[in-house]
Length: 330
Image 1 (cartoon, helix red, strand yellow):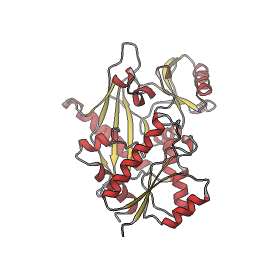
Image 2: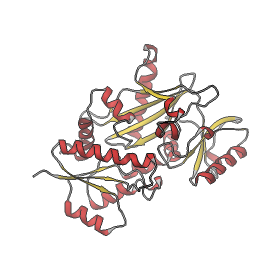
Image 3: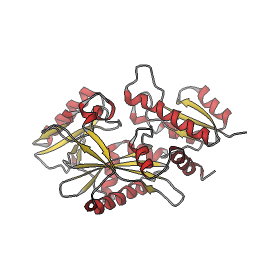
Image 4: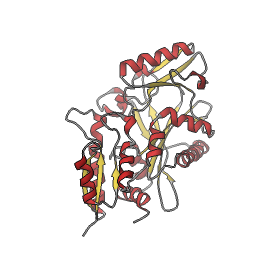
């Protein structure tokens, strides 16, 4: 009999936004790949509060869980709960462990770790934590949610100019009040943007072909991948941002440097299975890590899947390598 495995994801309501609905596409794609590999698959939306949910998992005794949980109760700060829950039940699961998931999902905590290990990341300000702020003034900053992913709450007004620390802190607090999320400010790097995907393999993590986000925005618009650029296919922002894997020969040293930094991030945060590291590179070709995405989106149109395809890796092989890293190849 085929061995049973489960695919878990955050529940998606009927009024869910585009970024929330995307996890259903991922779950379907992953389930299909696992079935093609000979597993019996159950898709089980994550329900921590239900004792029946835990009992059903205990009854099924799955070989592993493919973890696609991105939030709990719509809150990105709880993303690691699914990992801790599976650890509690002693069920192996794909992707980052609970500690790595917590460290990388808190963007400022991740930046502190990178800074302490000399991995370049833009300077930042968290309201109430001025002692750690090394931001230059006056300067341009981008205000981001502390926990949320998928560019939630990001738009053209996210980039601000501040002349003093007081002014910047006030701008961060005002935006946090409007969004209903904790926010922080990060020095805006006006340059090129890259995504480097990393996939586990038998010989260690493999950095997939680098991708650059190419911007074709009107003059005066800041080059950022905001919420509309990611999720609203009818928007001008979506049409003005495209992914490219084609580079000039002169970019080779820069790309090698980005690959090295991506692997350093993988090792520092003890990532597993798959990850994506996002970079900005300034006009002097100095790279800065913006954030580390543990368990990044793997829907068919995602950057990670596109990078894997560029490397000649099918989705079934991609899923298989993620599973093998979680189960020791069983």
